[in-house]
Amino acid sequence: MTKENPMMRENRNHFIQLYTRAQPSLERFICAQVPNLREAEDILQDVALLLWEKFDTFKLGTSFNAWAMQMARYEIMHSRRALARSRVILDDELAERAAVYYASEDFETAAGKRRILAHCLQRVSQDQQQVLGMAYSEGQTSEQIARHLGREAGQVRTQLCRLRAVLRKCVQSALDSGLPAEEHA
Picture (spheres, rainbow, N blue to C red):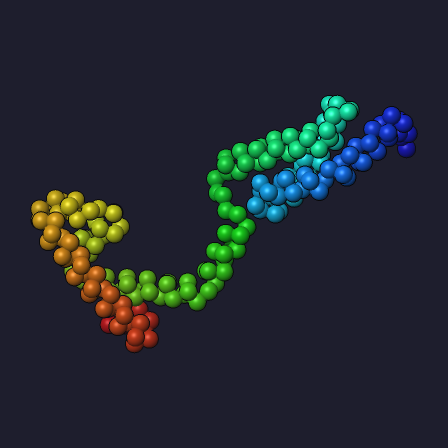
């Protein structure tokens, strides 16, 4: 077993004493800037390790808290840069909300309505489907659709209004009957 140098032990004890006093402030500082608790805890651990590794650069007689806060600030910025570089940024709360939604009746109801709408769309003509697709899938304005089809923009707006009414009536009829989209004729 290796004997510990008395100077190292004194250094370690001094660090532990300073860090123990600073830790609650560091935790509040980090949590105030990092809303995700798990991420904040990880950053706090990283900061503790960084402080220990860099303790030999700490100037005795200066404020350990201020020095530690500065190190924490750098770790938070580093964490944010790393998060920004990642492809998908989805915090735990949002992921949980999404999971709850997709497991809920609301999602099933919305999915059922989409199936019914798809069925109702099959009941309109190809030309009408094209106009709806241009407006809602492609996001074209009625003016753009009119130019493409060689018609007046007012005619396209009227057609879209009527098609929405037909589709709304078809969907509502299917919902009122309680039949799945596949069975609704």
